[in-house]
Image (cartoon, rainbow, N blue to C red; front, side):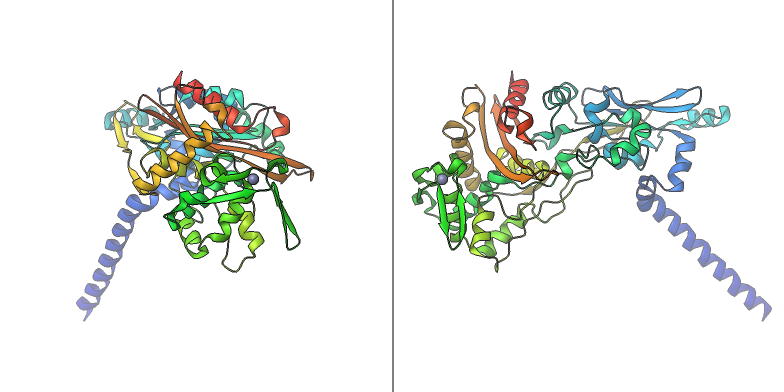
Length: 466
Ligand SMILES: [Zn+2]
């Protein structure tokens, strides 16, 4: 009897021990990354006590963030200060940007066993692993420079690989002084410097949304090229009124002309001709109302049109007003697929992780995320996106010896002080000798500059290709 009881207790403890081992293995394999990534977690603090945080490098292996030992302890240094404020982010105060999303890797050390023992013997910390990013240092500094003083953002992506080369958001802050300036910047709602406008900005797309309306019309109408519209500049109907820019009539126009000139009234008319069920479903496939495949904090784009909405709402939505919200990241991902035969490559900021001795311990390959358009749709849409440059609102790009494609957009919004302000957008790409670059620029308040978003995109393309 006693023996049986002992046996039961032994079996119970065996099961308990096995359970703990299984949980521990599970934790090490699946959960530790999430736990260490939670910067407020005590476990993360424990890792900080034994590991000196690794370095974040640009694509040419220049440090963008590194830890330096001082008399009083450690100091995190951001050599380029404001230029990478939101994308590289900071470690303190809960973390931001890549410092936050790659926290686990920066606090993991693949230093070799002998060094580990030697460090522990001397009471020193082990050096953490380093992350190598896709960020192009000279280009980020250039874009940072041309947008300084504005409320604006810009993203540049290589559409063939999904590598994000530039992510600039203005206004900014100096991450070296994050703790000193913290109270001031979290209260600065007018400028919101902590928001990465590229990935977290939520904007009315304005005329850039005509890309989605046009694509849907082409998908639903095989004879799309026969579309004609006579624009009077202003449309008054059932108590509402809509107009094209400055109420200037565009007159008789084809579908391509309506897109190139960005005619609001033609696109309002096209909106009423669409099958809304299909339009809503197709936009969900084009990454509206979806998670985005990116390794940094972002907000999803929202397309909120419902079948029961009024004709007025359908018309407004079709030319880019209404309730639709997008981010520069979202628009640029769609553009990446147009630039890459309809296929979106997974966008990413990091290529590989190295140990303190420089050995690669993890690598992310460039890989396909999803086909967004058929090859035929891509060819047709590229012809239309090209016409915006050759005869439309992005004509300023037509003189260069790279071939540019894209769409401009202006949206009227209200400032925090309730003044009418114009938001300016450009999303497009250019190619030259097999090299391609997708650019999306948004300027929140064009009153602060004499230039619109396409003018800044022009500068960025020139910098990249010349
Ligand atoms: Zn018009």
